[in-house]
Length: 397
Image (cartoon, rainbow, N blue to C red; front, side, top):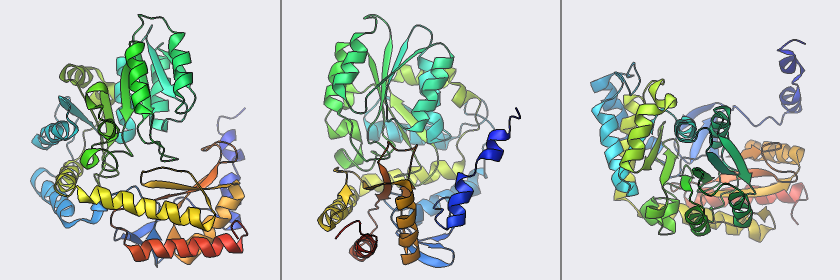
């Protein structure tokens, strides 16, 4: 059997392309925030994670340009060796202060961050316990830890009773790490953090929360999930990304100084990777400053998402309840999602098509997400187009 046979046999993408419904890898030719240009047409962007709209903010762009002028385009080494700039240390200190933790460590991508934490901390005879619907970055990190002979357990999505079932079956004295998204990236649901904290304490486990979709969205002035519930001192580690609210590229973990120092000297994902570029770090730093200076932007973001959530529900669409920037519209069938997506795109709206196996059976969806920079005319136009297409396809009446 040829190793490449699976590649030659993969036809699903080509079949969807042939039908004219392919929604992925669409090239954006210009980006103004809530409106982008694709195929030389202006499209309202309702699928971005650019939650505060800062990728086009003049101060963010200026910071990135100035960093290139001063430091060049790259660091040409890992953080461990020649790749640490004063910019990295400055941002780590600012993030630690913002998140109210002792220390922060930067990674080159958000995806890589989990791989820097979980396999480094959890080894043979120790346990990683993970929500079934955690982001792929955590799943990959769990598999790496398992490959290093750590024990890996999963519990039903956001189900604290099932988590306790799993925890109660483990050795009392065995080291344990519970990992969960703070805001789940597909549905926008918020983790049941108070109960999660309670169980972590009861069963002698440490707690890692991924705030990729929570930072800048929930919590006091956008400080994330732990802040949302007043439990910052009870969450051992908070990880996140710069590719959403912070308008850049990279990742971070915040926690106790001793833990961060251990990761800094033991995480292969850090030691053997080129460090975040000067422009990326400077852009994230500038975005963080803007978030701190304008906490009202968090209110605007959540208000925009709630306006859309209410609008979809009032029209008769099936929408998952929530209070984050992610508003999924459930259609249930993959091809129905593709057809609806195409009609939206042709009418000037871009959303994300989530299909199996990326979502559970009968949960194929159009995942919409919103920015603080969306104005009412953008939101009303999206709702109008959804309403027209929904009626045309007889999804709503």
